Image 1 (tube, rainbow, N blue to C red):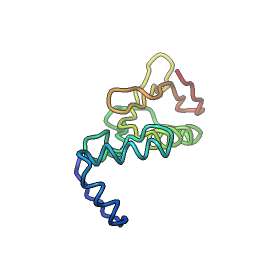
Image 2 (image 1 turned 180 degrees about the horizontal axis):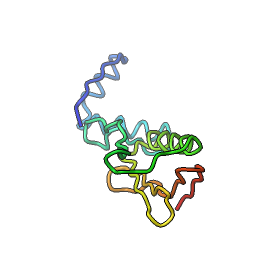
Image 3 (image 1 turned 90 degrees about the vertical axis):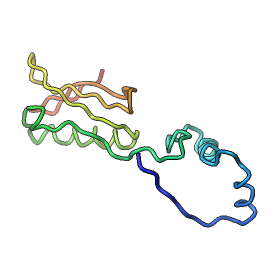
Length: 127
């Protein structure tokens, strides 16, 4: 992760109050959580932004089968889902038994979604 400085204007009284808070990152995350009604995984209290890139298996390196047009749309949907969930990896593996692609979308060590994708017809099966 790289550290990114963000500058924005706030009321001077709020800026003074924020300078008194020992961990401003946790304060901001708590405020976002309260506003959104759910956890906001911006930086998990570390003071650094979580990486916004999703690592996806390389079809050539992994020797994965070529996708037909019908399977491309579900795969794009999985990539969009992974990015929205701030996932870190989309792992694809070929299954020799039936020719499907197994996939796992994970954020660090936590698996968010897994299943199979048929590279020919595009059928998507979730686990």
